[in-house]
Image 1 (cartoon, one colour):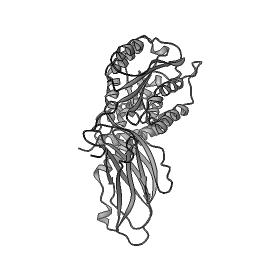
Image 2: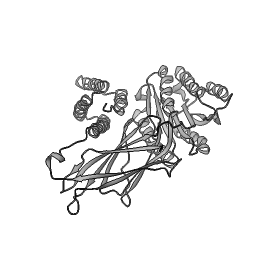
Image 3: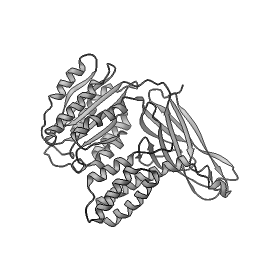
Image 4: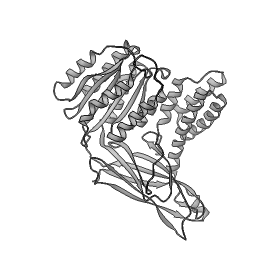
Length: 420
């Protein structure tokens, strides 16, 4: 049985015989059945700055220790902390007998220190896991922080792109996935930044509103990554008969990729790890020109996917598009793709809402909120709709939309509700 199965669907099977036309292609990856989970090369990076003092750090240490207790002898893990600088608390090692106890003791000895030098923390944890990356394991980093990154003097570091680029580089160059956990209220740690950091690291952003939530949040993400059956997966689009305009991930959650860099009618996109029994779905917007001469059908592109552990075992699909001037055929729509397009546009509206809040333009906020609420209602996302209604009420009363409410909206928007 192959490692990966590929399925494709177009939102519109037919395009007109004249003019340019936009079609959206669904690309779904599914792991083969009965695949064994991969050993972990895990890094945990904990914020132990002064703001973590008290119950925050104690709960964080316990949540970390709980994860370490669940590792098998095939897994290896390391723990580092960052404050004024960074240091390794648990050196990377296989979790054979006795390793969990020693690691737990080292973690529980951590105490709070000074600033929040996140870049030093990232550099330290990436260096520690680097020697142990192999095609036969999967490498993840889980980052916990309750504050904004600072420099060595404790001043907030506003140069956020360098952090984003660091996470992106480690993922694209070495297949290292990064998930982030924000602890407390989003006003303190900049939820948008942690979300973007996780997106570029092909991981997940999670929120723990209170220290009591940490164990469940850590467990949720550990459960996901420990079910990984394929790592370092790549999607290739080749023989492209058109212009690639935009690429999204829509399942299991949403992410907007950088614009595809097309050369010789092809491009590749690293998409990270695949978990057991968890399909992944992507949407690719393609603009095509009118056909040369009379045609009923032609190749739109070829899609391939593979894992670095077995690059010769490629899944491949040819995607064909039809040409027609029949109004009935041109009006046909694929309900599954249209639904996922609405999910993607809902996320785009979230990004627009965040930009409007940042600008302070209340008229723009009101307009985007109205459009986004209609979208979430159409998608049947009651929790997300409730958050938006609370924002609307806040604006009506002359208040300001809080960073925390905006972060909750972002977390709700990231989720995708698929058709049954």
